[in-house]
Length: 281
Ligand SMILES: Nc1ncnc2c1ncn2[C@@H]1O[C@H](COP(=O)(O)OP(=O)(O)OP(=O)(O)O)[C@@H](O)[C@H]1O
Image (cartoon, rainbow, N blue to C red; front, side, top):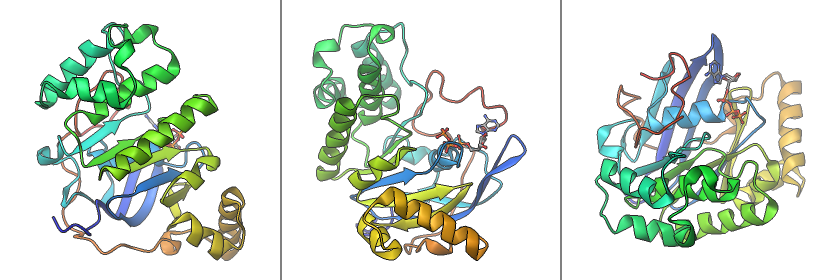
């Protein structure tokens, strides 16, 4: 794949959940080697979009291309790491047991478990049962699983939700360390103060992308240094103009081919959304 080709290219994506349109015709491209923040209020469609990117969401229309292949393609399994919003580790296994299990599922090198333990600062908690970990440690354990196999792209659904400011800061530092080592990251959050930590933003509202640009470009376009204010200005401007639509989102040229398939994402996880009736292919 060309080094400047988008790691994710989404065209005309529509997702219907529970009879309602959760993603309403979204177009964007994400360049490689950046931390892209997917931000927007609760219920705006972030998880639905991420699930479509992982190929575990039935889509009503459009295409999703990941690393040059249709989302969910089996060839992406080891190239894309995913941490869903619900804990994606087995509570009754230790941290090390979880990692060994998922490493075997992914056919990742045995040494990977040790590497990701060190990378996520979990080495000392390796023998602890996941069910007894603190929220912050559990978040790290989920991230550790997503890091197995050294994926080129990490898709993390609200990894910092419920964490205290110190832990959030530590996780964001880790995301930037991963980015420096060449990994591309898509990280969702409904907390606008995380926007300033991202290289690029995808702002969503009511199933639509209202901005896809760098924080600085967004500040300049909206005339405010405060990203939360910028978001509000976009939304209010969009409403008075009749729509906060994807026209605000510049497209990154991309392959634009293929589409979600019946394949799954990187790995099956406990509690990974199976209660979502009809959502999985
Ligand atoms: N399992 C489901 N069944 C039916 N509707 C759903 C389901 N999950 C989500 N939805 C609906 O789809 C829409 C988008 O939800 P989604 O979870 O994608 O948003 P989100 O931005 O990730 O929200 P949050 O930040 O709260 O996780 C919402 O209207 C939500 O009620």
